[in-house]
Amino acid sequence: MRKFISGLVLGAGASQRFGEPKQLLPFGDTTLLGWVVAQVQRALFLDEVIVVLGRSADEVRQRVDFGDAKVVENLVFKEGCASSYRAGLAAVDSHAEAIMIILGDQPGITPKIIDSLADEWAHSEAPIAVCSYEGRKGHPMIFARS
Image 1 (cartoon, rainbow, N blue to C red):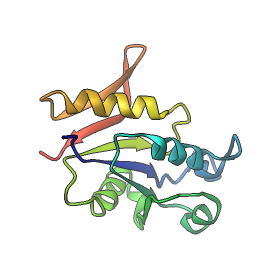
Image 2 (tube, rainbow, N blue to C red):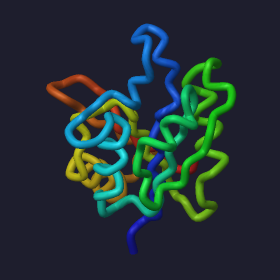
Image 3 (cartoon, rainbow, N blue to C red):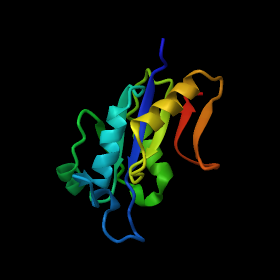
Image 4 (cartoon, rainbow, N blue to C red):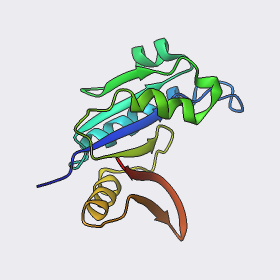
């Protein structure tokens, strides 16, 4: 039996250095966050998808198709990434055996990457699994409930 994995997409960044919300940058026929959410929802091994919003949450909700993803708002997003983790974790299904953290501004993410990481983790005893790109660790990453 496959393990229940929740996907947590972090899209609450303040984009302070960038100026405008990165989540809403045009990407393909959608926005950057819209692209990432669509890729995540196409993955086979995620049982639920939760998207955390912060800055410009109302505008992001209007412009991004979240499909059947659960959208939560991090009202204290200026406190940093940990506050987005807390907001997202509060919405995770109680059956989840792990969460996969996915960045909302990672346009190179694909369902294949997500499914490969989930499958590798599910067949290991490791509590944490991380992707590697040309020898450098990066997102997504998965954490067992423990």
